[in-house]
Image (cartoon, rainbow, N blue to C red; front, side, top):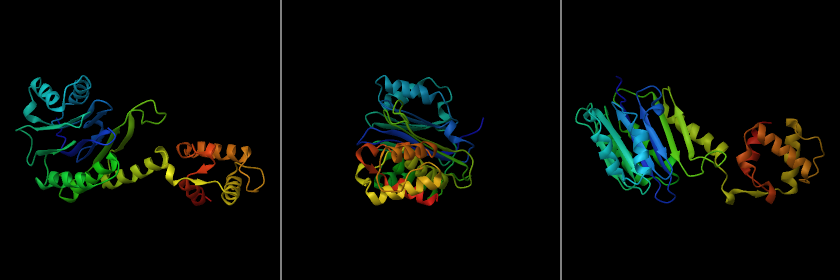
Length: 289
């Protein structure tokens, strides 16, 4: 059975309750095996001779009220091959736990901190998980960016000594999914790539643009000058047939919403009722001329 030679982080955002996993490996489509997360329950990374039941079973245990350490003990107690497993868990309260079986391939180990655990096997050395932990603790911003920084630091410290192939990033947030009716806030995978972390960072940037609502403080009023420019851009794109008179009336708004629906910009056009627009939408439209 393939060994999922991997380094990963499970973590909880202590400010807003997001939970997630980030992972890189010399293993095809590691995101299909290692990361599991559920809002209100926690997150699990299962690797080495990975037992995929640790994912759903660990989440169910934590959703039922078991803390990370107790959930980990329950998982290991029922596994005859526990010595070959490596797993990290964080629960909804931010309590973290990790385990590295004695039969995991060298170098293998883990480190647990406040609200997170980092773990890895077949690594260049302990310095990989130390670098990951330090990067996570020192990086600001949302959980996805902090975990991605941890992966990049682990790779820079030597990473998986067999090389690199795939990476994944999964963050669960209550109501955080597209449509606000699921917890799948960030779910990105790079299944086979020579630079999987760099590609994951690129995808996260696209995710932030297309699927993350803009910061309200960044929105700007639709002035007559901006309205006229929007009308011109929409005319050139084939969505508007009126005059570029700087009046952002219903025809202009309908044209912009139609354009946004085709270009997947609807998450960034929710402020039109208030006469505001996201500057990134304007920049996107200008680039498309």
